[in-house]
Image: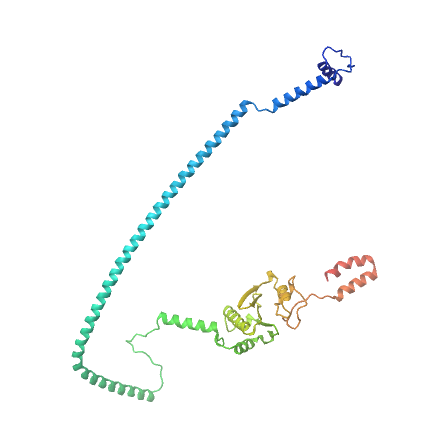
Amino acid sequence: PFKESLEDWRGKLSPGRPHDGSAPADMFTQERLVSLCNRVQEVLVNSVRPAPEDLESAVQTMHQRLNAKEDELAKMRKRMQSMALKYETIIDQKNLEIEAQRSRVLALSEKVEYLSQRVQELTLLAAASQKKKKKKVKGKKREAVVGALSLDEDMIRESKQQVQSARASPRRTPQPPSGARTERPSSDHRRKLVTEKVAAKAQGPHLDPMASDEEFLELIVGMGVQDRLYWLEDMCNIYALSNSVSTELGTETAVLTLEDRAAKLMRAQGAKVFLVSEDRGEIVTFQQSGLKVTRKVFSFNDGIAGQVADSCRGVKIDRDASQHHRYSTFVDKPALCDKVRITPHFCLPAWCMIFFGVCLSPVNFLHHFPHACTA
């Protein structure tokens, strides 16, 4: 089939020539090649050039898009006009309200002026009436004084008789008379007593906000934190044990008062103050930079052990702080809290198991090695 198509193509190129497969040498002449190239170029140009129908459709689509844009612009103009009308109506309403308020204010000012004038008139009338009454009372005043003196003498005699009868008779609980009604304290008075008791219990008998720094330190020592109070060269550590404080004070109020007093101490000493809460597991730090005092709270999720260990030399760390991945064993040991769990660097049972495993046999060693690693 390939040979047949090749022969057909050769016949088309050289019409009138034999189709025996042997073409003459002058079949592909220069003129024929030029004509073929021109033909190919014409075909390509005609294929690339768009048809007039396509141009008309493109123009129509462009007109449609322009019409759609014009419609959108018209809608936007209508919306803007409607919004402008709405805002104008709102502004007019507000102006009317302002005018109404101004009229009310003017009316009230007129009423106030009228009332002030009326008060002045009434004060003048009252002063005139008092002057008239004083003239009438002068004559009756002497009789009233004599009557009051006689009443005072009678009351003194009755009180003396009651005291003498009470001394002579045995002591009994005073009972109200049968017809009299016992007076009970009012609800406001009882509420006042309860609030005073609660406030006294919350503040405690020893917490005085006006106390000096020495008294505050004595209070901390008296609450059982004397072994957790350390004064260093550049730092003041206060470990507030909330369990011991909550026996006589409220936990929240005690922590707040301790923090306030610690901040005052820090301002006086110019040092860092760490207030460590054992029940909540938080470290409250007060850091001073110039005149500004910043308060930061670190919890276990933020890695308090690593933060504190990297920031200072000796601090009080909570018992469970050693389990944090940022815990550092290079903190001063005396300044740590009691019962701090530290992972040992040398474990005797593990080394013994490894030694005997190697000496006995490789099989036993491979059997005991995982247990030694876990130990």
